[in-house]
Amino acid sequence: MSRLTGKVAVVTGASKGIGAAIAKALAAQGASVVVNYASSRAGADKVVADITAAGGKAVAVGGDVSKAADAKGIIDAAIETYGRLDVLVNNAGVYEFAPIEEITEAHFHKHFDINVLGLLLVTQAALKHLGEGASIVNVGSVAARITPPTTTVYTATKGAVDAITGVLAKELGPRKIRVNSVNPGMVETEGVHSAGVIGSDFEKLTISTTPLGRIGQPDDIADVVAFLASNDARWLTGESLIASGGAH
Image (cartoon, rainbow, N blue to C red; front, side, top):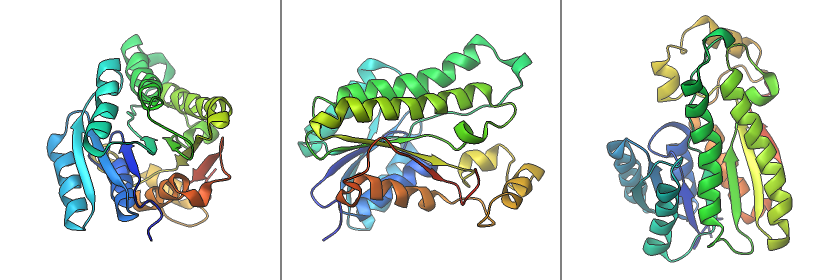
């Protein structure tokens, strides 16, 4: 039997990149998955099509996690479609880098509204339906550990994700709900390609300082999330697992 058979999972920001890989990995382990998207309905539909073609169950649900009504709507869709909720993966996030001199209020609020407030709002909505044995997995970043230059606001949001993970693990532990985070290093996604990172000196530097000698792939992160979502990780909560090929 697959590790997540009979479970229902919501993955935010799942229309592409790491989120899409997470949705597919959870479905491959037997979960019915809500594939959330903010703007790319086509991307979410493709993820759903890939899951169903492989024999899994999934549905695409739009919603901006930084808006309370949308966050509730994402969770409500899971309950209306599948009748329950067992796993929440807070993956939705944005990243734009700028030196300290160029940081604006808009830059700050864009990142904190999605990366931090969005996580809180979706989690808040989900808690009405999560019971004993449920798992919340937050997607952070190794940036919170290595604090790269020009990432002040982004890194601050991911530091907040780790802090929230620790707090909620203690707050929800008495309800037997586990809360962990996965902190990826550089991962080859559509966003990384469009930012011009692939083939750049920055990518070469990252590879040279990564013990396993490459950057990550979305599946590398998705498999860690699937583990944390499953009963195999039943004794883990409050952990921030760095998934970076050894780069700290």
